[in-house]
Length: 191
Image 1 (cartoon, rainbow, N blue to C red):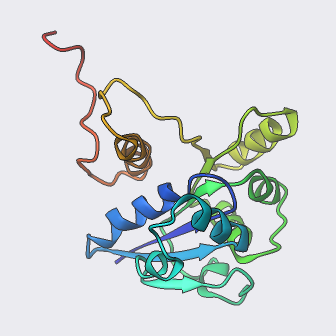
Image 2 (spheres, rainbow, N blue to C red):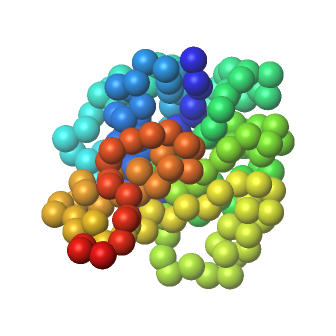
């Protein structure tokens, strides 16, 4: 069983976390743990009226409360392969960059860094100021992977979900999880 943690924090783009969990839930080899901040729930409801919070929670095998710092994912002794925070607010990024484990999402991310496990943050804000960039650098220097959800267009997207799948596909590529969400670039047509 491959355990992954998905965090959803209070930034625009909860659909990335939802789509990632949809993909993983269809594969029996994965056990998905979800931790969503209060702000993450607010953003999710505002942007995704078709997704009730209960329906999002059903995509995870285990849902952890933001304030439950005694949860399994708060400990390095609980074997977790990777954590993806999708989306990652600048507030969560700042807390992670400075080791402020003030809720379960930031504590679980801190565990990933201290245990040298994969931590991917889909940081969502623009434009960026110097503190945002410094926090991204700090997480990168600790071994985290900063992956702003910037879709490519070379695959000729026809819908918003094609753009979402592009970003989720990049996350899966980084986790070395095979997928067919987006075909790999093989060069220009006819080349």
